[in-house]
Length: 259
Picture (cartoon, rainbow, N blue to C red):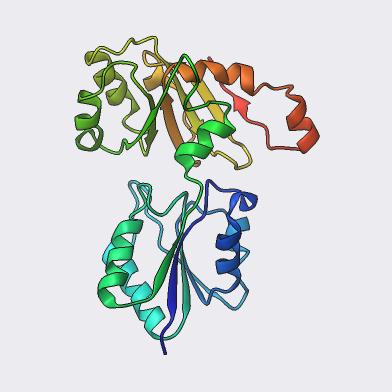
């Protein structure tokens, strides 16, 4: 009997930001292989009978190898199970979804891709930072910041201030990144933000500049991204502590940590 694998994007955290298809696949799941940062309220959509196996990768912590995750998906599908590989954000945005799809393809296992709302888009929006804005930015670039070898070739080829930079997995390397941008001609007064826990309770944003980015407050227990560019200055106008829509809709407020 042949099963099926769904590579599902869980979005930035909150269950009500899932796609309808993602929620449906969870409700039908026999096995859920879940990332470390997926919210409990999202995982709760899977039936009680479904097996849950945490396979998330966190920096500096022991984690299951990607090849082992691939084997788990393939083995369960071949047993006839409906497998949901539940990934933060979108499966194909710095989430190894492509590697998993290729492994399933090679094994002859039926699968689908269920896109999710990437934190690269959602986190800035929830913090009041538009990635593009007339007169400030006509484009944006999303990159990994986990190591200079990942972001160095990209940064070195960018004209100063040409795009809004969105950096995932870059909290630990933010000081080096800021210095590298400065060395490439970016003004050290370029606005910069650290957004933590987008759509989670306790979400925060720190707003400063490239010059102060290395000293920006971080929350190690929450996922975080960096946003660099002139659009960051709009955050104080778009999201404020007394925003009427926040009170009316009971949206989780974003705590502003502007120095």
